[in-house]
Image (tube, rainbow, N blue to C red; front, side, top):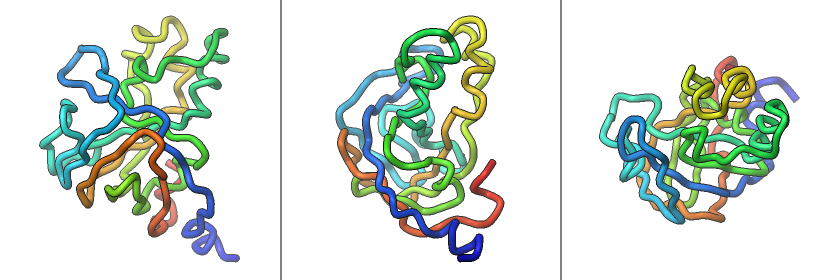
Length: 168
C-alpha cells in the first residue's frame, strides 16, 4: 500500500467515553451524557460555541492517554475534566483523524490540528503537567454537520486526510 492509501484506511472504530463542556473561561468543566454539536459553532454550552471561523470548535483526547499522563506524573489516570478537552474516546488513534472527516454519533467533524498543552496544565495537574501532556493532548476539530453525541457513540473515519496533516 502507498502512504496515501494507508492514511485513508482506518479500520478501527472508537467509542465516546466522556463528554464535557466549559461554559466560560476558568470555570470547571461540566460533564454530560449527551451534547449537541452545531455546524460551524461547536458544542452547545461550551465557551467556544458560536465561533464559526475557529478550527478549535471541539477538542478530543484519547482515553488511553489519560493513564499515560497520570503515570508520567507518578499517579493514577488523570480526570479528563482537568485537561479541558471536550470528548474522550477510546479504541482509535486520534492522530489518524487529524486532517480527516470523521463521524461521532450522528455529527460529522473535520480534524483541524493537534491540541497541544498550555501552561495551565501546570496549574491543573501540578508540577510537570505541561510536559506530561506533550504528545498526548489530542486533536482539535470543526463541526461540519450537526448532530447529537452520546456516551458510547462510535467514532469512525469517513474520509482520510491530507498527507502531512496527520502527524502534527
